[in-house]
Length: 107
Image 1 (cartoon, rainbow, N blue to C red):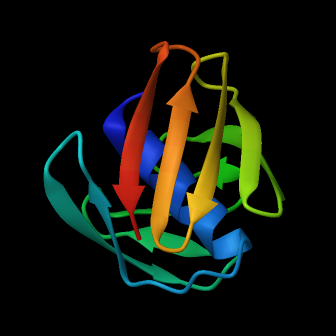
Image 2 (image 1 turned 45 degrees about the vertical axis):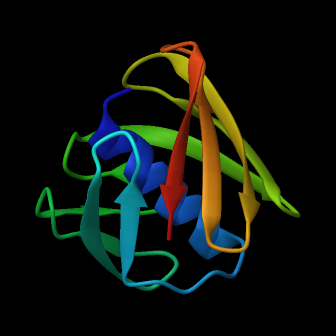
C-alpha cells in the first residue's frame, strides 16, 4: 500500500476505536494531513477524496477493517495484502504485510 492508503486506514481504525481527530501525522512522510467527517464517511483533504470504513472512493476500491479493543486488522482488496495494527491513545502502529514492515501515525 502507499502512504495515502495507510494513513486513511490508520485514521479509520482510530475513529472506529473512538478517537476523534481532525488530522493524521505520517512519520514515514513527515507530514500532517487534515481529515474530517463522521465515522462512516470521512474525507482526506491531502488527496481530496472520500473514504469509509470499507471503501476508498479515491482509489475506487474496497478494504476491510476490523477493530477489537486497541487492535485492528484487515485486508486491502486493491493491493491484495493484509494489514494489522494497534492503537494506543493517539498513536497508531500499522503493519503492512505487502511492504513487510511497520508504519507509525499520530491522529
